[in-house]
Amino acid sequence: MSTLELDHVSLSFGSVVGVDDVSLTLEKGEFLSLLGPSGSGKTSTLRLVGGFLAPDRGTIRLNGQRIDHLPPYRRDTATIFQSGALFPHKTLAQNIAYGLRMRKVSAVEIGKRVGEALDIVGLAGMGDRLPGQLSGGQRQRVALARSLAVRPAVLLFDEPLSALDLALRVRLRAEIRRMHQAYGFTAIYVTHDQGEAMALSDRVAVMNKGRIEQIASPQTIFHAPATEFVHTFVGESCAFSLRIVQGRVQSDAGDDLPIVLVNPLHDGPIRLYLRPGRLLLGEAATQCPNRAIGRFGFAEFLGDTWRHHLEIGQQTVIVDRPDRHLVAKGVDVEIGWADGDMRIFR
Amino acid sequence: MTRRPGTSHLTTLALLAPALLLAGVLFGLPAIYTARMSLNSHLPGTFFVPDVTLSNYATLIGDPFYRNALWVTVRLSLLVAFFALLLGYIFALLVWLRPRRWRVMFCLVAVLPLMISEISIIFGWAVFFPRNGLLSYGLIASGLAEEKTSLMFTEFAAFVGLLYVTIPYCFFSMLVVFDGIDRSTIEASEDLGAGPFRTLVEVLFPLTRLGMLVSFGIAFIWSIGAYATPSALGPDTLWTAGYLIQGLMTGQRNWPMAAALSMLLVVLVTMVMIGFRAIAAQGRRGGG
Image (cartoon, rainbow over all chains, first blue to last red; front, side, top):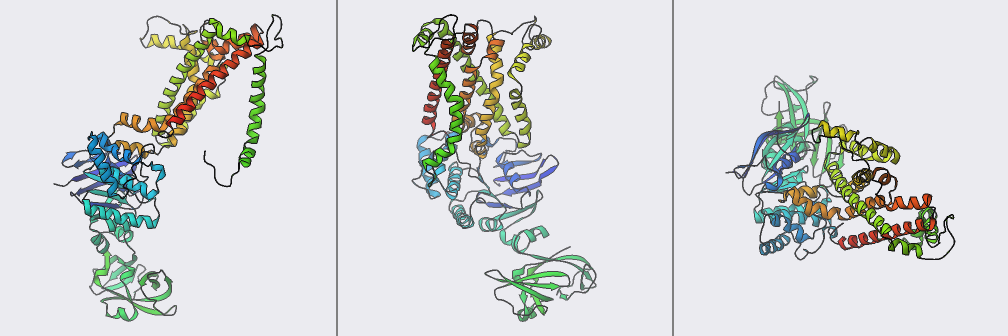
């Protein structure tokens, strides 16, 4: 039996749709990310599980019990808020003990668990400090410790790292992953950062306009995106609007384009999606089953890669290569890619 | 108070100077004049006779009439301050918890009592409380009372009148305090298993403790110095300190006695404020 089950859950704010017919299940010990742009419904979905919002339709079950009508304090969930939401007038130990006191855990047990929780997040011996004396990263560690201490059925992360700077974010991300590997908690993690979602999760649910576009492993999300939205939102992509007419590739306007696709396609309009990092240029491209001729424009240095801008008809293709492809502006260059590196949507 | 490095005492003083000067001229000088006046003596037919005596204070403290007036004033003010804080707190909490778009409307409603002159408000109550007033008709119409009743010229009317003008001060000061609280701490409390009442006691009260003291202090000081409202709405026997001072000034023309009573009020309020500061300082470690 799954730990958490959302069954056709919908919620609207007046005329604005917040969450649109979302269904998902979470297994015990699973780490699921809700990934999407702002307004995609990911935070609303999390708040529905936490009890801060009530669904208009659908049911939410936790360990088989319906919880969608229960207030937050009657649900076995614990949220790590974006701001940390520590109680500023309580010490770290008192903050962590709070949920245990509410659950009527014995004083001895509370002392033990507070110590453990501080240990886990690497703040042992700091129980007497007040939250005001901590850095942003430390505050989020305490927030995590406070939620872990009550041993909830599901941990709910509400963009806990988004207020921190990049280096700290990457470090804490790895720590959360390590803790999940070590302690095996069940979690939903809301983020708009695809790196976080990919690095942390067993599965990622990509959300857009209140709906789940795709829910799958990070690898599947990246290599086999189910929709155009997922392709553009996760990873770099470049897209072409094309038409297939008797096996030939044409632009929208009806001009023949120098693109050869190895597998013949049905006639009709298509959208071709490519990953810039998976394209080959020049000599290397000649061996590829799918090829195109692009007119070289310019190259940008991005650090790890050079980004080459080329024109095919009226459309731009970008190709990221580790080395600069040295040709003059306006020269035709061959571009190639394998079947697995393109997605076609109709 | 924390001082940033590089800010000298002199700069601080220079920045405070205009405010200090204004306060000194407008509040300091009259206070000194009143203090001096309270030491003069009085003969019938004169406003005062220059003198240095503590006899006015001796009369105030010795005479049960004045002692009673001070007690009545303090009791009324404490009651008003308590209920103004209670209602202001609830009102501010509700406004703080609502979405922000409602706020302007609520604040306008709250500021209304402050935009009407005290005299107009008193006249308003004068058509509300009497036998043939709104309250009386309302009670009969709703079946809560069978006969017309008048609450005009009762201590209750004076209490309501004072409450009406002090609630806005409590409301706004509490709203500012609530705005300083991270709203997600309330959600975190509920999330960790505390119901609304536990959240109020464990999180909101400690975080608003200092604000409550300030709010109570404002309402208390406002009521203790009030003169028109309690004397117009209250019974003839409700002799508050403010009413007595006015009587001594303009009725008996005994300025030294009026000044002494005023000074006593100032001392009383100061004592209350010092008490508050002590409580606040005590709660600072745990409060905020």
